[in-house]
Amino acid sequence: HRQCGAGETLPRPSRSGQGRFSAFRDRPRSCAERRRPAPHSPHTSPQSIQNTHQCHDPWRHTLRMTTSPSLAGRFIGPIGAVAVLAYAVFAAVQIQVLNPLATMPGYTLQEIHAAVAQRDSADTMGWGLMSVTLAIGPLIALIVARLGVLGRLSAGTVLMIMLGLLSLGSPGYFIASFPAGMTLADTFMVDGADHAPWGRILHALSTLSTLALAGLVIARSVRASRESTTGEVQNTNSPS
Image 1 (cartoon, rainbow, N blue to C red):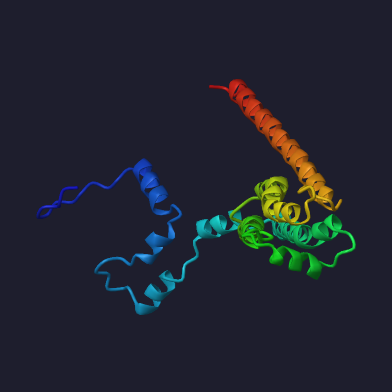
Image 2: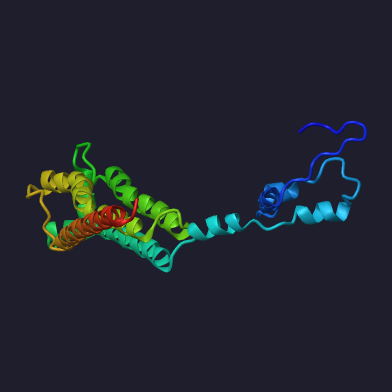
């Protein structure tokens, strides 16, 4: 823009130019632009500056709504975490209580532990390995449930992770129960496998979780394939 000289006036813009300028002037301004006061404006009052800092940004509200958790996400996470925790607790009871009693019928649990302690061996009932192995799943489940409640993970993702943790419960149970089974086998000269039938419940639950997870993955893949195919057809039919 050039400056006016002495006695010279700039030509007024045309109506089309005024329309463009007015459209630019009347456009919706962002919150950052509204917060920025005009420099060196003698009409800017402290009250107006305070009002500009209290403006409402609709985009911020939109972003907050897109990350809000759904009703399914609020329930699937806690229910899945409780299921994984119950699985781990029942596995610990099966390893340390139910299976030793089924291995040596007629013995009390105190007599079994006393017989194990009297052996001149470093074998134990594997409390350390069992505790660490069985605690991994509940910790992950609690973190995933928290993220699902906060809306950081979708309900479908939370469900898939919970089913995956339950599916891995069967190999985790095998690792956690191995020291106790070997200790009972060496102490009482019996088979180190499970003698209590309750371990089959854990294996059956892991199998069902694996099948459900596979079905969910297949369903998601088919739905994603259909959506991509529909999008390609719409792009092909749309005028160029």
